Length: 303
Image (cartoon, rainbow, N blue to C red; front, side, top):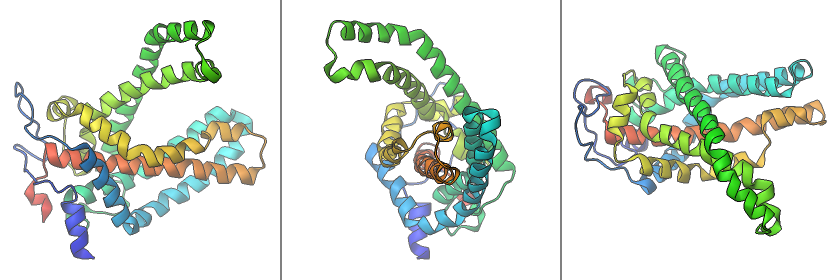
């Protein structure tokens, strides 16, 4: 078992580790034409799921604490909803649940990059300096992506929505699909494109922080130059199973707004959050493997 974990956790991607110059997260120097390395879409997606399935015991060991936090947050959201409204209560439930998962995410980064049996990897649930730095960087990236996505939607939504409206009025709307789903599709497409760009170019700062390194957004963009589309495709491909599960359940605010019994709402809130945690864990695997390939982990961390 130990040898399997070393082979999969430490070298899970099958890539040859290249220690970077100048520290744990050095990026190509300014003016470089970009890294010669290229990431493989199928390899990243497949290896990310392989790591999750092979180390399911570690995942469960890490997850029981944030799961307990999510259970308490679900109960609190149900009690709070009549006073704050389902929107605020659902948002607070999501934020609390996601913050509780941050130590799991950073530990998973370290396991993939440094090895499941490497004591230096600290594959345990802990809240330290790396976790706080990770949380701040993730908040900046996701907040920037969300705000930018809304701005792009406001600008380009009418441009894309005009032709959709024309098609509907002209009768080119089989089964009413465009009238029902045209506007939401435009909004989510705009946001997905922006978030995909951010993930592909700037999110390598997250695995760098998880292993105790430092990387600027500019260095992340330089390291991922030429691989942006591949990273987005790998993320989408690997996320399909978890995204399908996520689509089955309503958002927390929608669950809290229903007239269901409190115990049914409680169960639905727990079911809502679990596929999202799975989705983030798969994404973490892809980011870690991409970091290993494009930046590299110092050999001193591999002891």
